[in-house]
Each structure stands twice: as structure tokens, then as C-alpha cells.
Length: 307
Image (cartoon, rainbow, N blue to C red; front, side, top):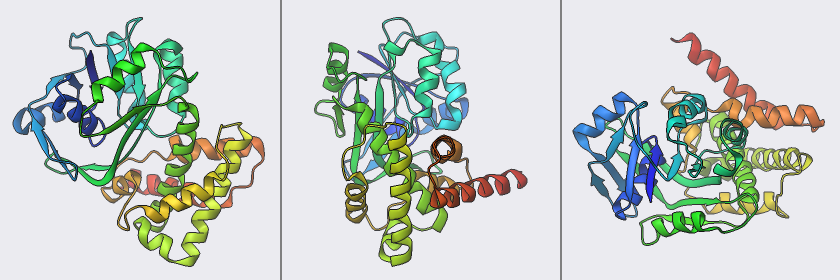
């Protein structure tokens, strides 16, 4: 099985690197700058689960190649370009597995390609790309979940899972990927919302009563919006997510917070704007989400004016 990983950053570089470490056939589709960097240094993973470095196979957009599985690990604001880049490699029998947060990109993928080719996917990982281009992975969680929309377990899903067997990553096929994705969306929208709003890791936020209560209310708002859209959430999901908040590292930051600290692009419209629009359509009151989304849009405006 030949894998094409779109992007060699904190997510794609990590899981693609773990596949390569597991002696799988992996190629990375990258931009010219990243390609030059990888040619000089190799792909370097520094992780609590073990370091790994190697010289990866890379291609640029427009290069020739044939692949069985495409792992899409770009940011949401890069999705349109990424879909154009992978189009030459998507044949009838190919599989595309997105690793992004949220749900809006699924519509774009299914519109661009055959719905049968697109699987569900999500990641739980705290990782970042250092200025030198190293992938820094810092927590025990490094999970990649994927599956068929109907919950079936055909050979193509089992083959992907088998490729990860024995790797230094937690990659599993799921029979409930739709629910998994919505519940992850709920968690990351709240987590990234409060960490960017308060400019703090999750530890101080959960420790202060007022900010903790804000987070709990935000979870409830987002849950209400999703349930109005008939998202298949499990019972007491907000309470379960708050328990997870209490268990994760005190110093954990969302990837959106880290992007903001670097004065980089953020996925405001893809994550929070999408839910804010859903709330407006369904009439759900979301004052806490409005505060989060307003903060992100103000950040985007200030970022634009600085260029």
C-alpha cells in the first residue's frame, strides 16, 4: 500500500513519519520551501513516544505518482489549494482520509471527488513544528481515527489500520466515525475557543472558577447547536469532555493558540464560524461562542493590518 501524505507538518509529518518508521511506503506532497528544508535536515520527529529521523520521499504539486491512500493533513485555510494539488492522484479506486478538525471540509471533498472515495478521519495530538522544521510531539495522546461513514469495515479500512500495526502511534479504524468526528469537533471548538480568548493554556483556565464556567457554558452552547443539526452525539458529552479537560496536561495549548502566538493564520471560519452560522440558522442563543468568534475575527483583522 502506497501512502501520499499531503503536508509534512505537525500532524501529517508525525503520522506519516510513524508509517515510514513502520516500513510503509510513504511519500509527502509538500511546498518548495518545506521540500528544501527536508532535503537539508530530513524529517525529524522529537516525541515522548520516541524520536525518529529519516530522509523522506517527497513530491511537489504537478509531479507524477500513483498512490493508494491520500492522507490530507493541511490546515483548513489551505484546503482549496490542497484539493487541486491532489486531483491528479485521485483515481477511482483511491482513498482520501482527511485529518482536519471540523466538518466543513467534508462537503468540499465529497463535492470535488466521489463520495465513496472519502473516509472520515480525525486526530488527537499535541504537536508543533519548530523553526528548524522539527516535529515536536509532547503528550501521551497521539491518536488517528478513521472509518467508513456507514460503520462498515471493508478491506480498504482494515489495510490502512494494518499499515499502522506495530507503529509508535495510536491509529485505529472506527465503526462510529461520524459520531467520533462531531464529538472531536465539539471538544476542539471549545478548547481552541477558550485558549485563544484567554491567551492561556488549559490548566490556568480550568483552575479559575470564572473561566472554567465560561468553558462549560461554551461546551453546552456548541452541543445545543450540534444537536439542532442532528449531530450524533452521545449522552452527557459536555460532562465527558469536561472530565477530559481535567485530565489533560496543565500546560496544553490548542494548535490554534500556538498559531496565534506565531502571528499565523487561524481556522476561525472553518471551526467557529461554521457553528456560529448553524446557530443563526437554527435560532440557538450562543453568546459565549459569539465572544470566541469575535475575538478570532478581531485577531484576523489586526493580523491583516500588520502586513
